[in-house]
Image (cartoon, rainbow, N blue to C red; front, top):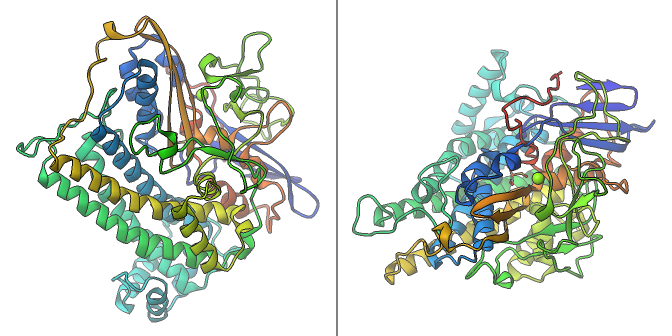
Length: 576
Ligand code: NFE
Ligand code: MG
């Protein structure tokens, strides 16, 4: 981190995936009045894909990231199926939904405990907690969670003490312990640390569902036309009763973690940080592509996560969205290190171009120039609007669409925290929305599992449609759009297939929307906008910047991939 007069630079931002740099400009009262969000490394996946077999694209794009490990594969096969007009069987759709929901639940719990909680929880303060008082607190916060005895918390306390006394904080190193912005009493801190460790042990369990249907995790296998797993109740080597039972057990364990730990901890911690319900709101524009088809992917109205846009915090209206319309989604490069063909300053992804053109300072540098190009991220816009994507966007689009299940979890949480609906438009609202959608997801996960079981029992074991597998059956020239709601938000892949090969491929990724630099009109991206107006207690310890940036759960690996087509490192920034 570098602080020069009125300019705070955080590089790299840690407890995220990928390489993100943030520069915040402070006024004389220590309030952020402008901010830059910068992806400091480049993505080249789109270039690598040109000329390849479209049926292989999922395996390349899935490796954009090991965090949202399945979502690029799903977006990719859907793009190819859209281009080739392939309709997948019912079981494939359900299994994809199960994979999606498994990813969502695991990723959100990990984000809360392991990437975000330490912005609110002071690990060192937990040392002064009384295990007996912690046990009493835990029994109030999560009465149905079994591990809450004074002895249990005394053990956690002893483990933590050993850590701190060794001087090697390990996973708890590098935070701003003792900062006055930490508000939890020591017992709440100890309880949160205990649950951090519980969640860490658990997260590897849920993901076994990916190994059942996709063979492995990270990067499970997918298939254009369906899913690459065979259902055969008579076989030891296919999805059989035993494996389906394992999936059910893992869902039930996850339900306990979400309902007895994650959501109660989230609400308990949030109740100490009411001031963050009016900080970090940012753009006030929200977009979701929607996901979880119940029948066919073209039945958008039946998605469990609805599609749409909310502009200007207006929950009275959800605007329709068509990602294939060339006038709606466009990527600009006014402040990015890329080049477009002469005369073009914004391109729809079907026409998208990925040509790197670095014009920034020679590293190491002290500051970037917000008036010129300053990021490896492009600047996506919807009808010219900067929009936020992610859990808050999905919850608001669901809420504003009048979906009863969304309304219930949102209204319950607002009631529990005793805050008005406007509190949603904030850092705290963004963090809470992630927990609330996890409640919906765990419920939907069991429902999708039950649908699969019903089909299997009825004798439908089909998981793939291979009618259009052979390239000879394809049109000479076609285009497709594939999408999903990744944990961090709306993810789109656009493919152009010509003569059986990929002619063009573009990914517009959730963290690209949220972390984008400003556009040609000077409109900030979501991270930048959310930082503006934040008061900072101590610029040398910028915990406020981390709280808001982490509330988005950044993934810069997704947003800006690391290596060029020849494997060469294109830019290197010294980590201070
Ligand atoms: Ni690498 Fe990702 C998600 C995608 S990026 S984590 O979720 O797509 O925002
Ligand atoms: Mg892209």
